[in-house]
Length: 82
Image 1 (cartoon, rainbow, N blue to C red):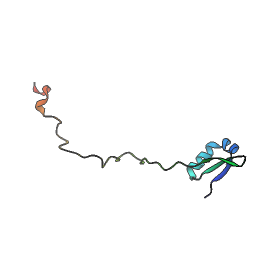
Image 2: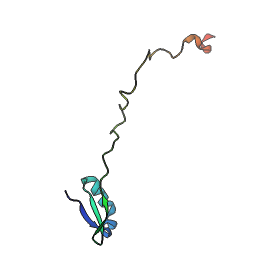
Image 3: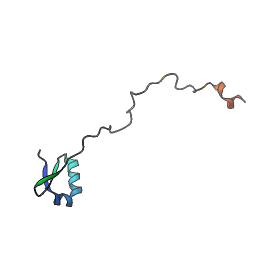
Image 4: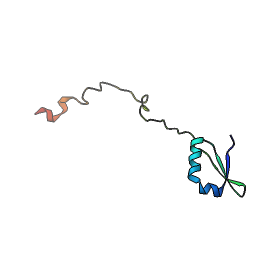
C-alpha cells in the first residue's frame, strides 16, 4: 500500500487526527511542501516489551534450600532467650 501524500498546511491543521490514523491503520504519510517531500510519518516499530510483566522472570532464578525454614537458627536470637 502506497503512503498517503499530504501538504504541510493540511498536515498542520489536522496533525492529531492524522497521527491517530497512522497508529490505527499502520499506513505512512508523506508530508510535502511545494510538492517536495519534507517528512515521512510512519508508525513506530512493535514494542519489545511483553504485554504483561507478570511471569517475565519465571525462568531466571532457582530455589536453593528450604524456603519455609527460618533464615537463621532460633538460638541466635537474643530476644527469644529470656
